[in-house]
Amino acid sequence: MAKREFDRDDDVGRVAANDTGTLGKAIAVLELVSTAQTPLRFTEILALSGQPRGTLHRHLSHLVEEGLLNLAPDLRYEPGMRLLKFASNAWAKNQFRTVAEPHLKTLHERTGETVHLGILHGQEIIYLDKVESRQAVRMNSQIGNASPVYCTGVGKAALSVLPQKRLDDLMAQFSFHSYTPTTHRSASELMAELLMVRRVGYAFDREEHESGIRCVAAPIDAPRHGIVAGVSVTGPAYRVAMEQLEIWAVVVKEAAHAIERDVEVRLGPGR
Amino acid sequence: MAKREFDRDDDVGRVAANDTGTLGKAIAVLELVSTAQTPLRFTEILALSGQPRGTLHRHLSHLVEEGLLNLAPDLRYEPGMRLLKFASNAWAKNQFRTVAEPHLKTLHERTGETVHLGILHGQEIIYLDKVESRQAVRMNSQIGNASPVYCTGVGKAALSVLPQKRLDDLMAQFSFHSYTPTTHRSASELMAELLMVRRVGYAFDREEHESGIRCVAAPIDAPRHGIVAGVSVTGPAYRVAMEQLEIWAVVVKEAAHAIERDVEVRLGPGR
DNA sequence: AAATCATGTTCCAATATTTGGAATCAATAA
DNA sequence: TTATTGATTCCAAATATTGGAACATGATTT
Image (cartoon, rainbow over all chains, first blue to last red; front, side, top):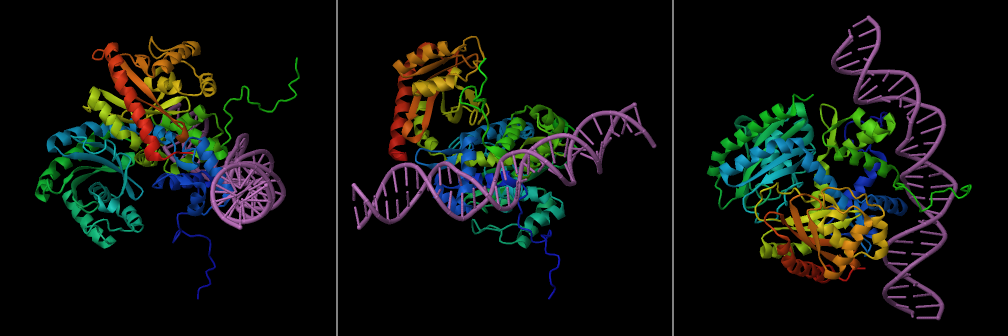
């Protein structure tokens, strides 16, 4: 009926219109290649990206020349070494991580289980650091790893301290993929838990992201530094009962608060 | 005298003419910011980059929007979390690293000291993995770290297997910064050692990069996969005598050869 | 040996983006 | 209120990107 006279893209329903020009397009290609399970040939990337041949070829060439991608002798494109170099810098110099580090160690000593520090980035949690006793599993497996917010302890803890407006905007974008039988399946279900998390100040992950893995997490909120994050203690379900997590919740919250305080002290008053 | 009629940029004396267009310029800004010791303000970056205000501002905005940089509330730019995410992928999926991993563990068991896997990238060695017993130092300190080739064990080992032509091209670019009293100071000095390394098949680092740190390394050459790399065993000078390194040279070489073989077997014949 | 096919690379005029100096805005100090 | 410093926005001119088509290469088939 309404003739839609105002057809220019409004805020409503706008599908992530990339406004980052050439850079954005190149990074999209980089993302595509570096997310792939194995190195990709040109034609494969062509099919996946939907870009025209010429354009795609130039983007790939530029990325290779910059060291962000590597072109192996068998003509397959794979992530470049320079990505590691960038990340190494980012990690080593991250001030928030530096400040949090001793508190993570303390928390690990108190609980004996693996401790994670994760930061909210878009609709994901990116793990900035971890401390674990035995390096049974691969050392750095978690660092830099991105997980959904809605099914991780750190994620839910972080969400719980967001202003309602920002929370609503975020939740509207979630897809609620069911990783396990206990993964939340809807915004209302998640919101119900977040209300609880806000009250008690900590969040559980009841095997919601990975079967057999439980955790308890507390939020770290440093709005003056633009940081929304969380600490957690994680363990295998067979060894760590929910009752144990309830007990640890106290020390996890203490760690989170200590980090919040230290951020204020060591990183200055912020804005 | 000669009127330089052919003035277009020849191969000679060409100063790294970036041919990667907009991407290259943006990444240069990213590099600048992510290499800085602390987060930088707009004006500081302006001075360091030498770019015009408008241009720089747009580059920074795009990088921020892409998550490659973060703009803190105090208007300082710092490395963005997405860099970690990219690297996490690059690291986890790197096939060469996956293949080498078990051999690194074996080598660690045999020597009891820290083992590194580094890959040649431009004129640097980028550390892809490490295995160490006690996580006394920061866990991931080394991974992704870039060090000069001419003063590291892995670096010299890698150089020793390069075709002379490529080696000459590379060496012409070295700056030979003297990190310690034993750092090589010239191409001829380095070349003399490389001749020796070629003969014996392993290289030492006699506290050339960092005082008090020694290592012995062996080259990994997989030309069909475009990989030039090295493994090393590193230890503190007070605990590890040069004689000990001489002894370990044998097992380090064995590890390197085992990795070379496994690359052929597990990664296929290559090109 | 010639033809066919699959894949990767290069070309270049039309088009969209970047460029960068100058104007504007914002916050703080004098 | 008026400087001052720093960040942001503007927009016509300069430049890089775009993408369809032609070309190159190498393997496979006829």
